[in-house]
Image (tube, one colour):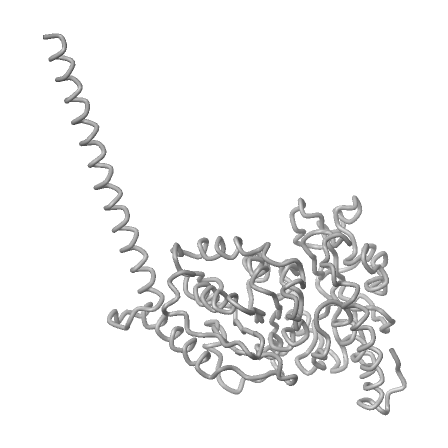
Length: 429
């Protein structure tokens, strides 16, 4: 009798456990089907046909067809024939709505930048500060070409603030091609919104260390700068690295300055460059920056690596300037070697020389040419740019010094070429 009761209880417990297990299987099956349906919906949202005739779907179809067309062209080769360039891979609403034949003499101002896919996550915070037209050139190679194409398209679809303002361009080695990511469900898996896209980009952030992107792959920084520059129709352009941010309201302040006084055609506007300790919040204005500067939380850009490269900016003079709150020219300087300032320049400013790749002499070569061509460097009184984190020796890739030596030899040849390009100039680098 006692044994029979134990068997009955055991059967009841076993039956209950089986029912719970069955319910769990049903629940997991439901979740799986729901997730699959959700992913199919998201994938349709990106690449689905045009059965839904609402304005939102029509806009997405337009972007999809533009991407398909841009990729079908096969891009164009750069002057060296070693890189393939896809211009305007994804166009912003701002650029799409611009009227043909834009008068570039008008007061328009854009930011241009460049990056590999592992630093593209910085775009979110850069645009949060900038909030205006931005042109970005991305370099990718190998499997990253497919990843970059997919994620750039997703950014243009899922992120309204990026869709509104950012033009994307892609550069890859000439032997590689980018393809339409319609069947690339792997890279789109789990993407449901803008935060998801940036989370996926964030998981890629440590893939490379600076320029160490491959043993036989050179990062074409000056080609990328030129692609980003030519990717905007703005009359004035600020070229910075993607992990830098400008001072708050710089766009509006600079355009307001232009309404009061037209710049000379041979003038660029220098923004003092700083770097800030990683743990600190980025300063929005000069007052905040100076406070951090005085306690050592902010310092001149490249102070540890190459103090001479930014010293001509005259930081002590700039920090101690007192005057109107409005953006204006504080003082003008002649270029001296090896100054490589960040500046706002007209689109007519000479392009960067694309023979310089990897580390060393890529920006100084362009500053040198501006000097030879007769440009004046006017330092603005309150605008600035800030790099996230202090630049220190140990963080650079192992071939940095070797690349710097190679580019130094190219720089000597480059300077000789400027004598021929500007025969009437008495200036020298």
